[in-house]
Length: 529
Ligand SMILES: [Zn+2]
Image 1 (tube, protein in one colour):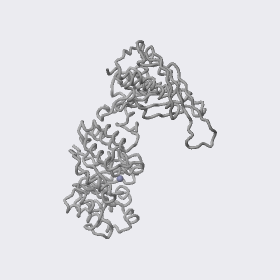
Image 2 (cartoon, rainbow, N blue to C red):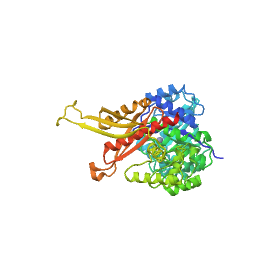
Image 3 (tube, rainbow, N blue to C red):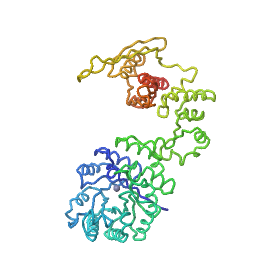
Image 4 (tube, rainbow, N blue to C red):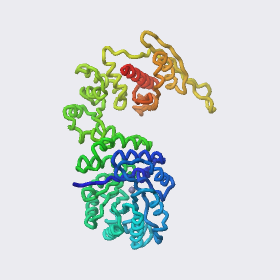
């Protein structure tokens, strides 16, 4: 049976993605997560190129990794220099790790045009550098940069590079599609050729410039590669590296290669989201396997299929990778969709056929008015509650008024802001509360006034904060008369929930989303008591 070792380079190649900047602490946290996922090798950085990476390797000594080995990255010695005195190789030898990966050129053109040295000197650089690191007792992986392009242009030189690295004692020859432009059949041919040449394990390092990094990686494994290099979520330079979040489940679930345990695989979605969180990037909902939409069912036909037989519209069981099926509530949805969604939300409400139909009609009506519940589960849950004849809302709006005042004409001085004031009348039980508040904008003033009224009845509401507020114009062509949709995300420090409001009036749309947010939290509190 095939076995494959996983080599993660999120902390080095992944950090090359535009917009990503990991601190040393970020890198330590990610390394810990990768260990939990069962990654065999974690490339921590390039100690010869920047002091942050030197600090990482020194602090990483105290990480209690139970599974992974840390690897340091660097390049072969400089042309016409000695390996023993090369600063970059010294940094690798002193990084405090047992595994190092060094990159060297395997394409003739790259040697003559970019490195500007002779083909023979390049071979000496590779042999000397690997030989030197082996005398330090290290495991040495050799990254054959531009291998596939080099193999296409001058196969005998690309082969020679591998032979030299193997003779010098490399523990793995990693074949790199550095420019990310190779096709799967080209990968297969070149890996098979390398496989014939040597018994030293082979690795694959693919970039995604042709959107084939995953396909190329799997093709390489099929052709005999023993080590797979990639990053979490496919982060990396330009279009990214091969995405381990898709490669790991493909290896394990589809190719039968036991590279991680079932328990480790079930943490995949969590690790993917964790890394995007630390990278300060919004998790991509449409990523295969780990995206929140990877197992969403929107069309009514698909939903009714999935309810009868889970695999009918899913290529794997989402729980295997720690993901969940998600049924989208939308105007395409059928009655079963609504029932399934309510079940998913853990609502033990009697949603018999007739009530579900009523609710569905309501959803369709509201969606035609610009509401959207795909990403506003809390508002949807409220609709389900409101469809119950005995539902008692914790408060009801009687009316509100918002005044925005601007006294002077431009030019405006910095201190002259527009003034916003809101007056709100709400009914709680039999009492009517009438409050007023100012805010730094009309929505904020409304929020303040509503809270002021409700806090007298529900003091714990003080924990609830608004964490995100998004406005979307629905029919752009009619400008300021358009329908607007407001999405609000709220948090009580433990849970987050999203609500939606829609109107041609932005204040009203905001009010609806705001009121839903507080109403949702209050009924949850009541239910938990
Ligand atoms: Zn790379």
